[in-house]
Length: 421
Image (cartoon, rainbow, N blue to C red; front, side, top):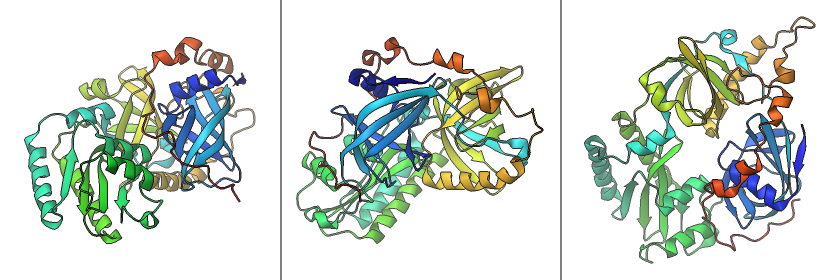
């Protein structure tokens, strides 16, 4: 089913329609790793990755309707610290295949369950309403923060301001030691030059040279607001860690109010891989509210009595099983901490799972199955069916889509990096 798109206009249509909306991965040493898409600017894709590459070639992938899109790029610029500007060359389309090994829940026998499901749209909606419990918590924390740092604030709203939007895109905290000394900037944090552009458009007095701004996140994923501290003198890393802990405490206490309507259902896990999960959900009111096809959800995955991870995923299929529903979910840019826990857990289960099958009984799943549900369920498609799922010209018509990439970067964003050594 392999196809190739070389037409520049066609390539941009695919990138606009799929990248930034679906989980994207970058290929390095024949393996795929999650990659952060920041923006599409001047016909170039801007990404953030901590990986090192031997040359300027880049390949990014997404899966859509049983087809895998491999977008080939050239490195055109960046900051040399993870931010890269990529110009597209071509896109290959192949039949998608399952990522990694899927482990059946019965093979591990740890009683894996999914709890606290919530649709990400409901997270944002929840903080858009006035809630006395939340207001009380914010007032207490603002008072406490102001005692230590006179010029400080806690921003918390259902809609992002420009500062929060940019921190979300870069997925980095702001830690400016000295705004007037670029040498003090660290690539670990928000880009220094981008911060200067924010500062120029702000109403912050020029005598404040140091800033720490840490997002308040719902379980590490959804940006709810931020804690901001400004100073006329340089702030050190110890202060940054204190503000980081402070922001986590604000998030924890707000979640504990129950303002976010998480599902109380306990769902049995059917199978699990590094790419996705499938679980059984009863036909409850929370199911109708939270679980929608192609919707993005957050939930707690209880691996065993002592291990729990918070997962963000896109629902790829919902299958009616008479009294219940089987939900297939593809993971979407998990946090580094949750990824490490999940990898360690699945590595333990692999030895039990890799039992040789009788000759001739090898699963057709590995030969014919594509990932219409991408690691999430049991839906099967053949290659011929998958060809029908390649986005049509009408589907890829950019006029039918709202551009998923925020126009956050200036035209002269960065200079080309040095040639890789």
